[in-house]
Image 1 (cartoon, rainbow, N blue to C red):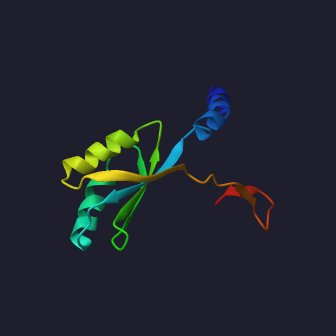
Image 2 (cartoon, helix red, strand yellow; image 1 turned 30 degrees about the horizontal axis):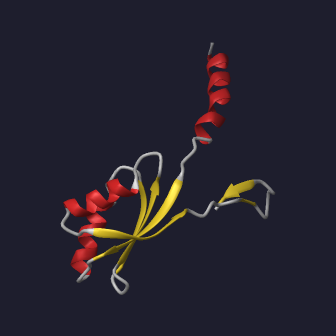
Length: 113
């Protein structure tokens, strides 16, 4: 019986690993005055559904958000910024760079980097 369970797990493992994430990147222009503003954005927006990465740039007053387009949208992100009192506008929107499997130098096996 265990043998069949292991076979079933092995059969469905590639399906789980190939779950598609449609990563997108949006650069938002936001009114950031100080490091406290950046901290507020980082603490609140990082926990929004679908947000994968978040980078605040105080010099250019921009926030770069990498998100899963299957879980959230740009208007939803803008609404989240409004909720914390930091209204934002879209400066640039682009798909995220896709990482290609790189062969391992020792074994020759592919690894995502």
